[in-house]
Length: 169
Image (cartoon, rainbow, N blue to C red):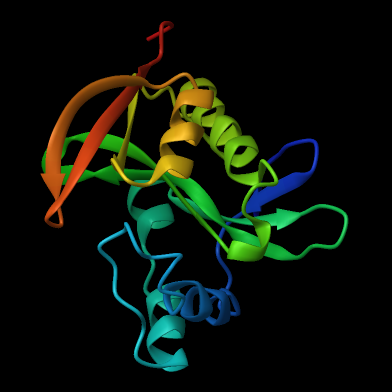
């Protein structure tokens, strides 16, 4: 298990095969994926295959990470950075079990991911996208000091693009 970073309450680590279980359950909750454009996995095997074939760490040196509670090692969700090659941009993403919504975990993990991207990876700009209706995600982006850039349509939903720049690079 490779831990990437730690916060006061959390640690973020690379995915392990057993995380397929959590991906299956996260993506099979309609409320969790309501604004993502993602679909539910058809089976646990499909979710395990997704994790097994997750190549972001190898291809880019970073990716999304499992977010775990330090105290119990419980998997809460995921958060991290994703390099989108065809757009030459790095985006912040996160997804948590509903039982952990409203506890500040997404904000804590997101701030840590942005800081890691700027300080360790030397990324010059990180973007965040969200549906206009996804008030919780918009709140996280704002708490991370992202600034509104533009409105657009994503998955047939009015959405917004936020950005944060690394002043050091």
